[in-house]
Length: 248
Image (cartoon, rainbow, N blue to C red; front, side):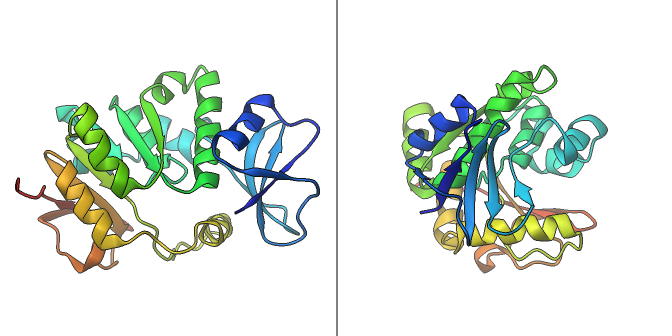
């Protein structure tokens, strides 16, 4: 399990997430590998010996640009946002696509099974709720911690099936910017092996009422080698759309 190093200035809200997600604070700053840093800014993913940090930030950077300048047209079409669908994001990660979907006015449930990633995302949502520019969007996002393939049918039975299940499984990055490369290197090392693609797609198709949207690199392979019903393709990314499985 990834260690957490807490500074003396760590925010109380960030510290509460450590216990909530079953993480453990270490007495010294780690000398190798990835670790979570709890300080006055919240939670960050760090690597020993390097200066870079990865955090869920919805108020600035790329998230702010996508929220204020656009860049969400293709994903909006893929989920058919004009129909105001309910969307469950089965591969939450740091919540960037979920935040874009919520910024379109949609109600989004986010599922994340990695405890460290869930803590980072929860901390990012907490800070977004405290920011006047992002609070309304963050209120439309609900985080569920646990295995997606288990939680999808459980929640569907309790609350009803969503219109759309959205998936963005981890895949090798080919983007060239140093920041993205560093972030993905940290993330790959933290998360490790990807989820079972076959089980993930099957669970999504058994849960969604209208469509399953899978984000892939433009030239990437189909999820679990299964061709979609249709696609929305951009310059570097495409969205494969699958139809729900027929009732048994």
